[in-house]
Image (cartoon, rainbow, N blue to C red; front, side, top):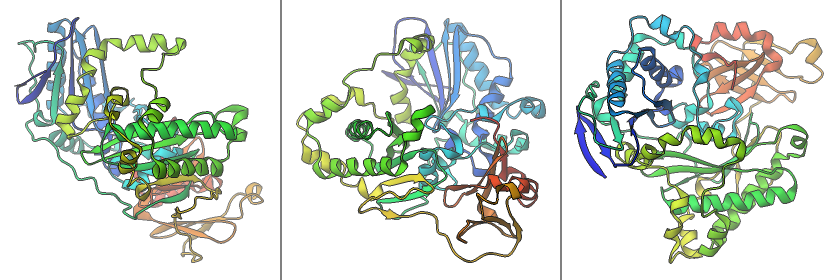
Length: 493
């Protein structure tokens, strides 16, 4: 692997057969937006494409949680021309015709890996609780209307994050002499990633979520990934035996060089099988298997038996989709080196890590997992009361104090099922359940999400959401008391 520089951009080169493939990666992703400008990085990506770019045999571009990448493959002159165009477009942002560029852009076309069901996603809830309305905690909440974002905001974002010092070019052959990477000058971005919730765990809490999830904070290591994948296998077996679900997903978030978030998400299946899902039982099984693993550890042979040693076969129906992106494999092989340069860390790939288990022991596994319980969080849907010995209920506080404000009740046809109310005050919005328990959200921390007539009220400080669909008639009133960027309509997820 070779390293050099072009126009102030670090270049990582590993020669591979076939056409030239190149990726230009910026150390900027969805976590670098702000709560009132969610989607800004995705908008920058779109505006780069707003300009007419040279065509290559293959190309794609993506915004992920921690990075934005532009990838191209083909003849060397094509790749050189396209990446030169991309850098030129970045340097020229925002365009003078900004209103035209965003007119038909749907902010909800942005894709966040790991977030499947938007506001209701239990993994998104855990990140919002963990990090608050910043960084990874933004992933739960929908993007703002891009028409509300200003040219000055775009320019500041580009000048901070889309710079020569905050980019890495990966190539599979020599960089063409014609390629020019003339980006705004700027340093590598460094971040602090403070936790909004610093209380020691283990804790569980209830939220407006679809499913159950567990998260633990770990020191970055392939061994930690192997152990969490082993835990996932144990949970899958336990869920299957209980007959409440057939699938549990392994979850992974790169945070920084000292911390990764690992976890498991269990979401009810569609159709009739969803009726068998019991969130409390699912949470109890997660907790039981986690405690057993942490307390007993695992021998290397047990881990190897629980974790696949090779890539799973691709389902026949998905073969065309996998083949369509095969051209990226040679340059994607450099992702770890790129991420190490930009972030000082990278996602650990368990499939290459079984060799690390030589000389490993159950005691060593316990050492790796020694802090897992203290950082563990489990989220369950409202109404669930799981029995999790040793874990504290850390659900959002409820009071009996009713703040002053306009009291809104459900329509008559819904009052039999909902005896609560919504109170819209001068500086807060409160929900009151049928038993008189009050959850108050300061206006400064409030966000309302609307989808197909359904409404959710979010407390950004807590990272939680509450359905207020029965008070949908109050939508106009809520719009009037909230800033435009805090009332967000979500047409799709």
